[in-house]
Length: 349
Image 1: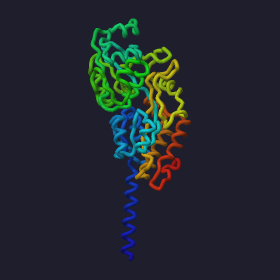
Image 2: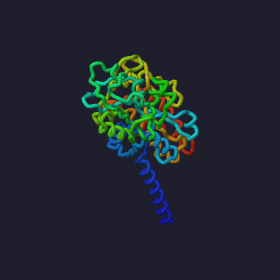
Image 3: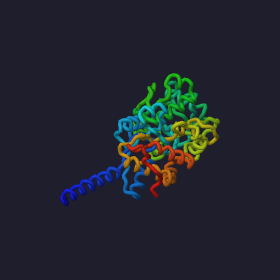
């Protein structure tokens, strides 16, 4: 009997260790847009708690596929899913952080912030209608700037990308022709240009292609010292990409009216608003087969909301407002274990 009890205790202990080990690591995949801040948060959280967060920066399309297939604990997408798609796959979503998508160029002699463009001209470049840097449409916005008689080389994302969704959503808002011919999605058929995988790939291709124009999340532009431009916003003002202009766009967001947090921040009003601003979202299953892991993932996200704001601002992201964090915490009650109880019942500390 003692031998049986000892063996039983051994099995129970092994199972408990397996659960702890399972919950000591969480895995996610998706958008490259937030990768710089997710990596920074993960490093700080691991140092504090010992829990490791592995994140594959594979693009929003890949993240949606992996969470739908249940091969990761959470997915990440810069394109919020519609209610019908969330319902179909048993998912819930919530916004994690906000930031800016930035058009960048590689033109000899042009310094960061020196070139000015608007959405109409950018759409015409990607439509293949404006093909030279000294085109009158560009020259008219850049009096006094020496523009070369050089072919424009558009660079776009070749993978399914939330950054592309934000960018093409903006172009659809400012250009009826773009909306009709190309539209908005994580992947579209660009009429012209070169494809690069991830924000990393677009950054690399734009930096080594003379005459290039591309679009990347601001942290990538900053880290790779890419030449950003000023962009004319909805109020007719030319603004630079920076925390202040991202925050101005984010300030106009009314998350309380957004079903399932489905809210887009492009082309917001305000004289200081950066016109290609967006949020990035976390996707999780409402019914959890591994509740311990789901609880640890939510603990991580909650810690990021509470302690990660300064780190986000250092990388020129915009933290979510406290009012939105409270709404997100309420939404976490939808994420349940097999017994139907919420996996997260409140802050651990």
